[in-house]
Image (cartoon, rainbow, N blue to C red; front, side, top):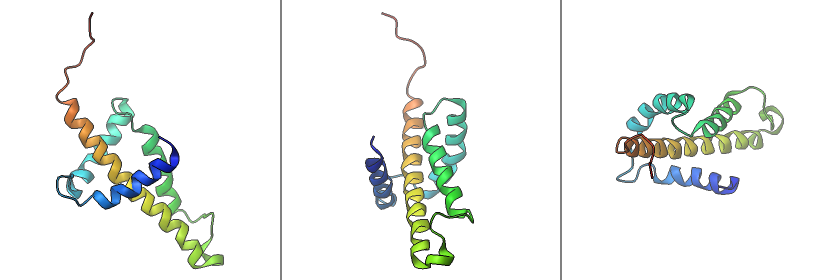
Length: 115
């Protein structure tokens, strides 16, 4: 998926997070440690996305900034807000994807297809 589509998907996830039928905040938060563990074990393919989200989180809390707030006031805050919004959307989208993966994984019998 191209980067602009991934960004749009992350922002769209923010809008659909509270729609009926989607996982609630409690389920999503509880899924984060399982998602990290499954990615580290190689069971879940979310490693690169989790790395991007970790980098975004570090950028938001880091005192080092591409657009310093002290010099550019509001403009300096906007870049942090954009990154934080993307991070929230990406986290919502990824937890929803992980929960769907977990649900489907439980219905699949591991093994190889023999022909």
